[in-house]
Image: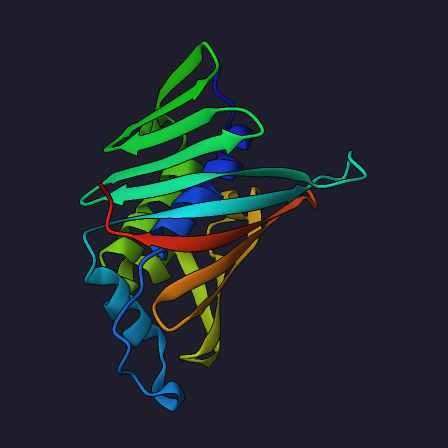
Length: 200
């Protein structure tokens, strides 16, 4: 059975996909706000990026590293394609999540996993630039300016907080540079993102 804990890596990928495209470049640094960030993100319908991720696990002395591609296609298709160290794909479309690892494939309905569905709804709200919906699930804190900002998401729902306690998203204007997820069990992941332009 597909475990909820296994979706933590997908959460990182999907949040990254929500922020992987550059937004308008004419906004003054001193006026950068959450509203402007959401507006910039909501204007893009698709995109792709490469990622390099490090997972810091309490049971290991060294971080686990992986790399691959992220893709988004409006309105609701999100993909994480891991190329190294071994091939793996996670594809979310509508209410369905498909995970392929080698010859094994898992298919689940997000509605069967309340806390995960909450994460995904928030991601879709971000892609749509729907700040109101996003703030129903997270407290948002934006620091810095347009050239160097950090958006912190703090889960409001206790079930979400039992999986992830904080998400730190760093970027320049409308372009994501890094996403860090801190888990409730003390583990964390850091993903560096490099935009590739419109999705194929």
